[in-house]
Length: 348
Image (cartoon, rainbow, N blue to C red; front, side, top):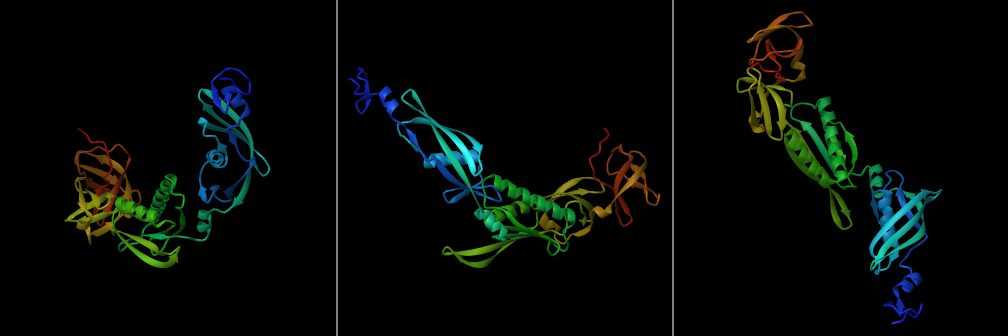
């Protein structure tokens, strides 16, 4: 067969012409010279059609090109490369679209101006309007949370929120944090995420969790509810000393409903269910711990001095250990003294 364009005898590719002539006279990509892109003034999210995305500009640009450029179905293994530079009202981009027709590579170039428009995204609009779908309330039974606990919960919830945001939950944010009635409240924009975070806090710190809802009316023909998740911690916390089963224990760790105790008389450890500690007597926490100067020691006891009044105190060792430091921690409960259950080197 002869090509109607060049007259050479060759395999006819399309429309009576050979492949070379067809490729010379046809383009396989086309698109606009200008595209508008809306960016959120506050968070930098980009609006793609009607959806806001917290993506990188290069990823957004790729999506814009694929949505607005016409690429021939004859072109296989399509690849899009861009080079952009900042302009006064946006970015001037050089777009290279490549692909293959059979084993022949096609590369076509386009000039594209991305005009940047600024607006406020849906999430920032809600955030500045105080929007929230749920409240996580953290309280403790018969006591107020101390500053350390409150700060710890703030860091914990903020960490959980950040992890969920990193996993793609763009609509999640903390609207407000308030210290109320000896506890702390977190106002969250997503009630599903708030429930998941509440469960994680409960698993990590124990206590009981209760939930309630408030009817907020109708939206888009759906009934809307605001959820409240109350986490009530026990009357004790990590680092407290308690009187339990005629022994004095130090609470070394709390994992959900498992409480890990260290007997101050012998440093033996055990775990109990939180139900066993209902109504337990809390003797105190960090206020019971004093730092004292080590004077001497033998296999069975230590002799320490209180630096405040220089009083010498003899304390029985809970097990055969040897203290290397000049200062050691002592727990004082009324007139009884116990060595603080730290990890010391044990003589063998």
